[in-house]
Every structure is written in C-alpha cells, then in structure tokens.
Image (cartoon, rainbow, N blue to C red; front, side):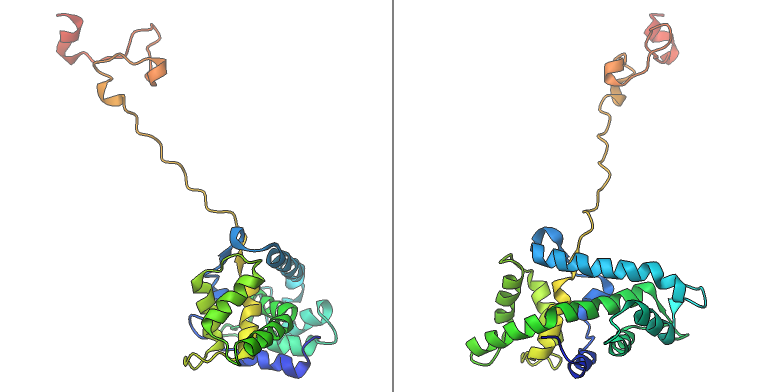
Length: 250
C-alpha cells in the first residue's frame, strides 16, 4: 500500500547528516557503478530519470525571473501541472523542504531534481523496504544491525555485493544518535534513496600516453627512413648536419 500523507510527512525527519546517504546523493558522491548494480535497480533509475527529464523540459516555462531558478510558488505550480494532483501539496512542500534555496529563496533545476528524485525514490521503494526490514527485524529478534543491513542491501541488489561504504552511508541516516541503534522507518527511507544512487555515466577515457620516439637521439648518426619516422629531402638524401664538414669526408 502507498504511504499516507501523514506517513509522508515523516520524510522531513530524515537527517541530512554529513556522511549519510542523503548527503551523498546531494553531492553525487559514493555512487555505485552500474556494472555492480542489478537490472531492477537500473530500471527503477531509468523511470526516475525519465520523470525528471520531463520536468527539466518544462522547468523554464515556470521560471518567471528567467534566471534558471524557481520560487516555492513556482515549484508548486510546476508540480501541480505535471505531478499527481492528489498528492501535489504534500509533494511540493516536502520537495521544497529538501531543497537548499539561494539567498533570494529560489532553487535551481539541479537542486529541485535532487529533492524530487529523493521523493520519487521514496515513493517507489520505501513501503517495500519497510515491510522487508520489519520482517528482517523480527527474524533478528527485534534489532537490525549493520551486518543485517549489508545482507539486506545485497538481496535488493540481485545478490551482488554492495560496497561497505554504501552500507555505512545507509546506516548513518538510520542512526542519527550514533549509538548503533537503527531506526526502521529512517532506515527504510535511506534504503529507498540508496536504491537509485547509481552512476550510469561511461568510465572516463584518458588520452593514451604517446610512446616516446626512441630513434631521435641517433638520427644524426643513423640516416632516418620513412619507416623510422624520419624525413627525407626531396633529393632522397638524409637530412644530416654538416658538423664542420667532417661528415662530408673533408
């Protein structure tokens, strides 16, 4: 079942602690590479990206100042026209709370995309995550540990290994007091945000280092040829220095 508006309001309680998955998503750090992510996560990410792309295309239409930013009212108008009308007020308020407006009280598309992406991820995933975590807690005797979380994240990732740093990020937002006690509701939200925190960009291609020419040092004593990369004069004679005439036999 979908979370109720009252349940959604709890999303605001998620900490933005440094080192948590929410902050990692904001700064685009510690992303999983797509090669280590299951197909279900990639499909969910593509659906999320398609939704954000639609909003990116219409973003300028609501930017009254024409400065690449939206006010809270303008953001609400955008979501009213292109969001779920039944949840638009709740969604708009929560998305705005997750944003970091500039000094003029406006947000860029990038900032909105971060906040709305978190919200979409939570809507798509949190209930499933919470149900599974509740079952996990019951089997673990009522407490969920970091080790349990690592196993759980791996199960959500098609039994593919999840980096320990990502497990730490998820647990950090579920343990705001830092006492090792993980809150299931906060953990389910953190898991939802982690689920699509994936880097799908191609690996960076570095320019290959050109091999140093090994023949240059001897070009004055060994006539260059086209095969060795040397240049010949129009007459076909090798371009060699005079060195005072001794190479001419004088």
